Length: 148
Image 1 (tube, helix red, strand yellow):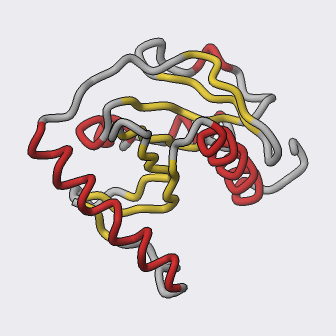
Image 2: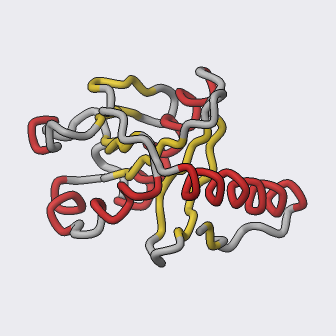
């Protein structure tokens, strides 16, 4: 994967992350715009209603130029960075989760601390989660959909 382009690496890491989460009965939606206007790589819904946000970083440069990831924290119970196998893991802050992935598999290297959403935000996100999921099932949800 190291010779692949950044978009290819991002796609492969995202695919591995979604495989991992689906294996744990956690449903994933990719490329969602949140109420703050930011686009999240993966928003995942667990069996107990917990929401995980995963931001994929394809390279050190991609990670270093990202100034927006903290704005995702208000939209999830747990936040993870997902990186390719060759990524230097010590660059990822200790106070967030870490997933290492390629196209075929992924592993949670460091769990994310839990930061429970407020009841009002959770309700809004859970209701909104279904709208893009339904649109994608219909086949008309290819463009990012806003989730508040």
